[in-house]
Length: 387
Ligand SMILES: *Cc1c(COP(=O)(O)O)cnc(C)c1O
Image (cartoon, rainbow, N blue to C red; front, top):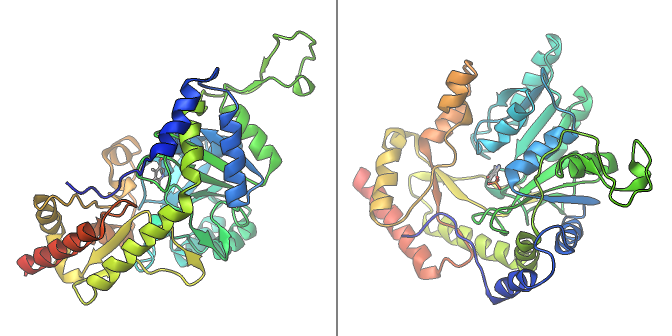
């Protein structure tokens, strides 16, 4: 079975993990800090907080920005549920902005219109979470102009986009966002098994995120509320969580980060081959921007409108040939929890239309050229048998 994503582990990764296992610290040792510094060096951001997974990173980003009950957080529905759940964890309300049918990313025009309408009735969001779908950056310059005009904070959910860039800077540089969030789940650009991180240029957001990630506990004497000279003393200053990354996981992430650029190059080659081989068929790939470079986390296309009702048949044919294509994403707002627990309905026609036709092809660094060509062959045959 060829899956849509898969990790690439080599001997250097195994050696890195083994050396931590044989060291004095399995967690809260020196490796997490090294990994955080490497993430800063790679992205160009000033600060990084490594944490237990991408979902925890999203939650920490919301906590750092002070999202709480009664606040509104906007995101897209064409994403993994975690992009929206993080706001609900904080007691906020979630609303969704529809996507652009060509880029499959948040539509800046619809965002502008929704902000204008919300401003009129005093229902502006506190935070906007943009998702760089499939690793292709949103138009962050335009997003940040709107965010500044309406005084809202921006989190980039870059779970797909580590290794990608925008306006010649790495995603995570945080030039157009307050915080950027990454995931190191095995299907993502690099993996630490479970793992995630936040990067930011804002010292106070960094301090808050770091504190929330470790129970809200402060250990630095010069930051105590009640000064103490006792060596054992620490203070809980916030209601935090244990969202720390272990040194074992950080060792894997740190080792993988060294090969990130080569992973992205491999992904790009695969995406190029698919686009060339499948040209002229009844499908359309994600439109890529001239000012961004995708991290090619997913290789997603939409079937022609005429095949809307045949998407599931197409996917089943692919799976029958042992190619486990994906459908990213089941719109978050249609999940039973969102429909019944939140008791709200949303009108997101572009997201719905996209979902009815989207297919994600296998893409990961170790996918061989013969596997790629056989994926293309099965796509062609499956499309033919639908006609
Ligand atoms: C994978 C993913 C997450 C969550 O990351 P985990 O590390 O699995 O918690 C969040 N948002 C998006 C868009 C993702 O793809």
